[in-house]
Length: 143
Image (cartoon, rainbow, N blue to C red):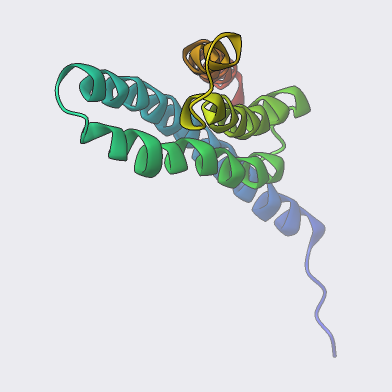
C-alpha cells in the first residue's frame, strides 16, 4: 500500500524552505553591501597606503562582489523574492563586468579622451554601491 503525503505537511515544508531562502538572501545582501564597502576601502588603501592592496581590490574582493549576486539570485528565486529585487541583484554582476571593461583604455595605454573613459570606473563603482543600498532597502519587506 502506498502512503500519500498530506498536502498541508508539504505546504508547511515548502513555506519553511521559502522563509529560510528569504533569510539567506537577506543575509547575503548584507554581505554583498559590506563587500562593496570593503572594495572602496581597498581601492583607497591602494592609492594612499600601498599599491599591494590593488591585488585584493582587483582580484579577491572583486570576485566576491561579482559572484555573490550570482549565488543570491537562485536563493532569492527560491524564496520568491520580487522579480524587481532579483533583477537588481543580477545587475550588480553586470555592473562589475562593465567595471572591468572601463579599465581597458587605461591598460592599453590609450591617450586623450579614450583614456578618460577609464575615469568612469569610479562613477560605475558609485552606481554599484547605490544598487547595493537599494537592495538592502528592499530586504526588510522580505522578513
